[in-house]
Length: 182
Image 1 (cartoon, rainbow, N blue to C red):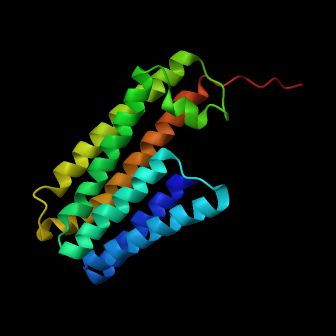
Image 2 (tube, helix red, strand yellow):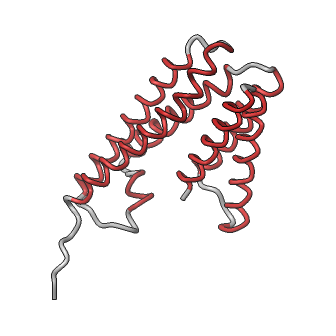
């Protein structure tokens, strides 16, 4: 559900940017949505996960800098930082003997430990690559590059994440217990 909310924030950002060509208005909208998502989670669940706190701080911090300094570099770089922090968190957890992917999904499905490990490394690599791709698309972080970057966020980042997630689901499906037709 959180991923859907993240995508909605990206879609809102894109719609506002596309219709106004104003990165500041789009950033304000994305920042407000990020704060509202965190507030809603806090009110309904009474807590935020570590990654939700990091995401909130990043959205408010980088969004705030973009708004205050009228400079798109901060909001463009935010995606790379979040991807790399997420990838690092998954990788460090795995190397410390805790599988972050299993912690998130383990209560919902049962998989062999080797599959959880493979998923963990796959997600870490995916996030590092997505951070690099965002950096390559955003570079040289100019106002002229904003249009290219905004289109990537909508037509590249979201589809790539969905395709990777579907690939992971297909991989997981091979290891799920078979139901018996009794």
